[in-house]
Image 1 (cartoon, rainbow, N blue to C red):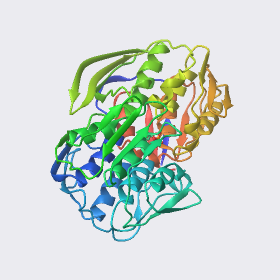
Image 2 (cartoon, rainbow, N blue to C red):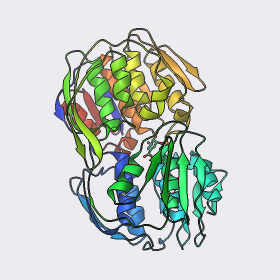
Image 3 (cartoon, helix red, strand yellow):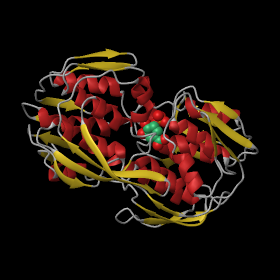
Image 4 (tube, rainbow, N blue to C red):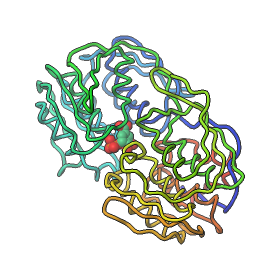
Length: 433
Ligand code: S3P
C-alpha cells in the first residue's frame, strides 16, 4: 500500500485524531489485572494496541470488541491471568513486548513473546537487565525477541537507575514491581512519559514519585475504573507540522493529550515560529487535554534543546519535515534512541530528505537539516509508520509529486490517516501498486 501525493494544498477544518497509543496499551494491561470492570473510551483501534488486547484475551481476560473507541475489560485481579495458549505475537509493537515482559516476569506460568521483522531486530536487553536483577529469568535471541519468560520466579523489589531515558523500560520495571516482594523504584536520567504512573494512580494504586525517582510496593490491588483516553499528540503532530508549513492553513485538533512529558513537539514548533494556540484546557481522568489551533507561519531553524528530545521522541521525524521548510539550519543532537525505533529514524529521515532535495548532515546522535525547496520523489518508509506520515505532510510544500512507498504500517498507530488527512486538504491518494 502506497501514498501518492500531489504537491501543494493547505489544511483547514477541525478534526480529532485517534486515541493515545501509550495509554491504550496501558489501559488493557492495568484493566486486566484490576479487580472488577474497567470501561474505556477513546481507545486506539490501531494494530499495536490491538496486539496488546489480543495477548490479554489469550491469557483469559474478557475484553469486549472495541466499538468507536469504547470497550470494557473484566479485570481478573493481580493473580488472575491464565497461561496463554501458544506464543504471543505482538506484531510491530515495542511497547507491548517491553511492558508485557515486566508484567509476565512475575507470573506462575511461562510465556513467549515475539513480533514482526522490525520487532525482531529491536533491543530487549534494556528490560532483561533490570528484570533479571529482580529475579526474573528471560531468554532472548542475542538481546532481541523472541523473549522466553520463565514462570514461577519470585521477584524482589530493587532500585534501578535507567541508563537511557525510556518510558518503556521504566514501565516494565514498575509493572514487574506489582508482583515483587517489597519496594521497586526506578530513577530516570531525564523525565519520560508518565502515563503508567498516572494510570496506576487512577486505578487506586499508590505510586511514590520523588525527584527523578518513581516507586511502588508490590502486592497491592488495582480497582477497575473508567478511563477516557485523549487523542494522541504523536498522531496530532503530523497535522501540527502540516498546518504550520502549508500557507493558508487553519486547523483545529480537538481533545489532544498535552501531558507535559509528551508536549515537547509544541514547544519545539513554537520555538521555530509556529502559531499554535491552545484552548479549552481541562483535566480528563488525570491527564491534561486541550484543543489546539494551528495556523501557518514562517518557520526558522533552531538547535532543538537536548532536554526536549525524550519529551518529543516520537514526533522528531515530523519536526524534521518542519525543519526542511524552515529558514536556516535545525540541529538535532542527543537523539541516538531514534536509531532503535521501528526503523533507524535518523537514517530513514536523512534518506528521504535527500530524495526530496533537502540538504542534511547525519550525526551519530542526530541530524542537521538545512531548510530549502522541497522537490518530488519516491520515499522509502522502511516499514515505519511515522516516517510515512511525516513525508506525506512534506507534499504540502513540494513542487512535484511524492510517492511514499509501503505505508501499510500506518495502521499500527493511525488507522484512517489517509482519509482524515485528505478530508482536511492533503492531496493524498492510496493505491496498492
Ligand atoms: C513509549 C515510549 C517510547 C516511545 C514509544 C512509546 C511508551 O519508547 O518511543 O513509541 O508507550 O512507553 P522508549 O521508552 O523506548 O523511549
